[in-house]
Image 1 (cartoon, rainbow, N blue to C red):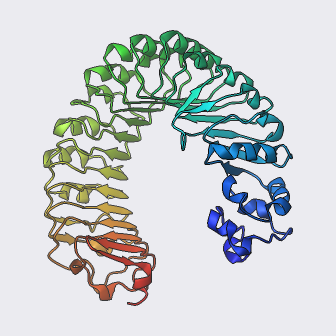
Image 2 (cartoon, one colour):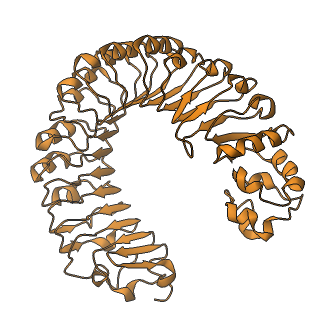
Length: 480
């Protein structure tokens, strides 16, 4: 089959490769199960020799993901499945789950993804098909309408369920497995259904993600039962008020919290100050204007507050948490005054201050010498010296007023450099330039670069350079 398809070099075999001449003749000594990971059922049946080699191949395969892209293929899939050659398939993606007796013929199946692809009203039928799937750990429904509400009762080992765009209130009370992760987005359920569901999964649940659902105070109050919860995500939720968030006082073990795009005010965040074990907090895209509620969160390592109304005062509260190593404050109307506080956070490794009103980053470059990623894009900076940020892996100065950038030659660990939207007055690189790890460079104009400097010896890993109307790739670097 050639070196390109050797198990050590190949994890996914594309349809075109499978149908090529070199793949039509299988050597029985090849470890085919190490090569095939994603298989298109439709294209497999176009192969003339599938009847001879398919049985051997799938019997040997491990952790394979079979993808059915068209509901018309399901009948053919079921006929082949009955031959008993799908025992080792671990993952199945299909636009409609109406295959009978999956458990009988796919005993090692671990995940099923029912996705809305070609049919806008995909349906899930035949709850019997899940009987015998003792290894099934995950089911994902996207854009589906559940017909049989007892579908879940046959799945005793489920650890994760993800449901998007579902309209069936009877479905929820039939989830009885000891789930560890539950994800719902844009679904409709009544309070009684939610209450039954919470009762069934509250002891085992570790991760809960809810998006674009209409919850009242009653539904939020029920969430206080998730006392073992470690991670909670709420996105695009409406009518979130101070009264809704009283349940947070019971979530003593919560380590990760994300409340995004919920029109959340500072007043509604008051009850979060009881979350003493939080290490990750993301409250981006809200209307938060002050941060007194984070004072007691001494364990936070990652803080994301992008697109709020914090201003410079918000930076003062943030700087009181020395444990933070990753800070994202994009779009908060922060000026140089706010950097007085942020520059005291000497443990920072990742800092994003894009889309603010900053004109100078001298305080940052002088004090935050542990930085590995710095995003300062869409500001008003005209000059900068980054010579002391020797650990930087990524630097983003895009869309400023930058005419001078000094100290680049010191950044030997730099992998990504973004300078688009600036009119540099001098060339970026000199005869002393050597960037052993730089992979991606984005500039406003190739006039900012001395192309003679861009040799493979000086830039051994550089893959791509882009500007507005120019694209220099790795192959062209060899010519320099």
